[in-house]
Image (cartoon, rainbow, N blue to C red):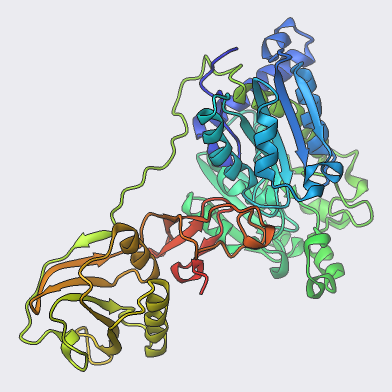
Length: 530
């Protein structure tokens, strides 16, 4: 068994591989493709070639190209290949995916799971939970490869796309200009490009879709955070009229099966806005190539069949490249390749509990929390609740704190003027007799009402004052949940998966929470089950 530096790694999202690791993947795929085309004996050096290694293809959502390319990639490796039929499996008996994978891990010394699911964050969860479970129980850590999860990501499609773009650009990584066209709202392949295109030094992305199908703001913001130049157009006609078009056009089909009735009614107009026509040919720049993750809609293709035999056809070669890149992905995760890798490895983020800051105590002749509120001799005062918010919002925050902190005890609360100005208000909760909050409750309070302060009162005097911000992580609370109904952790799926949120700073400087599993963004107030 080889122990390469990638052994036991998973590919749940594009960023599970560092930029150097992605470039290494593309270089190995290039070497493999050259060896296969030239019928070189070097091909054998890429094979895992172990019968005690199991590849499980678990496709809980229909697929043809992704499933078959992974099946052929696994067979290339001469390992045990297990096709998992979800229609007749334990999933039809209401077994959780976590329990199913636990069982399968024990059936082979080493295993790799290629999973396609409608539930977003499936592979991220399984890598987190099953990986630790396997090591604790003496099993080799399995790998998980995301073959598409809902509207979230499709990293292996992204890797084959980037490999194809590099071939088109003759392996020049200095810059890329790409047009993304079609259903950018539902298309996980274009969502993955928000991170995947980072392998290029300078990136310009043109987003071409009607408003109803435009890229979600989360991914547009991520592109801008990554330094991309982003331009937005509502139709191909508007784009071509701009006079500055990309050499690489990436089309996606309209995913009607994911659309609501109100959008479906507009389908003919939406298709027209993103479908290429013969009269557009003369407006294309030299060297333009069209790409598509496939399949095309045979009735209403955005790339019509009259283009199939033209030099614009880059999608056939693109589709074939999935075989090479997926062979390499499996070889990396098995530890079979990687001994010659040099560069920066992917690093998990480190978290510092920096959300509690001891603040200086400023003495007032008459502490403001005593004005119109019962004085506290010994106890706690939660001050500066939602300072500067409208009065109704401050009351809502007070109610949330009382409910979520279970403050069903003798206390008083109210909304009062802040010392920041006559029209600035804040909330206060005064709690006599209670002398301290545990660390878990401090984290809870910081997540419910970031920016508030906690004053510890002894003998009518503030002896400690803490300013609370949003904690870097919040989990292990029974009353939080991801509000993305497609997230694997959402209660309606009954997978019994722990909600887990990570703090993120937006480009506007605002702190928000994102779900660790599906990466859905949440305001701090949205994670609570009130």
